[in-house]
Image 1 (cartoon, helix red, strand yellow):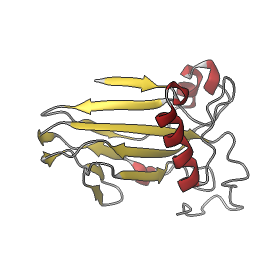
Image 2: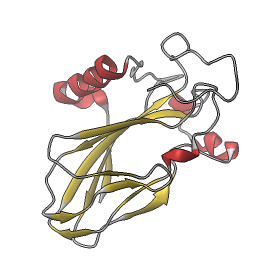
Image 3: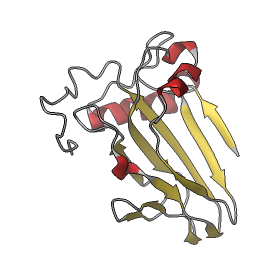
Image 4: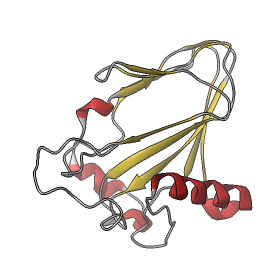
Length: 166
C-alpha cells in the first residue's frame, strides 16, 4: 500500500517537515512552483513485502519531466529522509549493498542520506533496498528533498570528484 500526504494536511506533518529542515539544514518548503520537496510518501509492507534495489535519483533526466508542475525545475532528488513508523519482529531492514550498510527497522527511528555528491554527481553508493518482512508489518514514510532552494544551504564543491558531505 502506498499513499501521498501533503505537509499542509495536518499540523503534525507540517511539524515533521520542519523537523527534517532543522536536522538537515535543507529547505523542505512545499510550493506550488519550484518546490524544494515532495509530498510525504507513506508505505506499508506486510509479510513478504519488500522493495527491490533502486536509487532515489533519476538516472535518466527524461524522468524529471514526469514530475508534477510544482516540481518542474526543482532538479534532482538531492536527499532522502526515511522514518520507520513501526517495529518489525523479523526482517524488513533497509540495506545499502554498495556501501555495506544495513539499517534495522525501529519504531520512531530514521535514516537520512544524500543522493547526490556535493559536486552534483549521482552517488551510486546510495543504491538501497527494503528486505522482505518475515514477521510483522512495516510502515514507513519518506520525504524527498530536491536541489532547488538548497544553493546556499549545501553549495556545490569546486571539484567534480568531491566526496559527499556528511
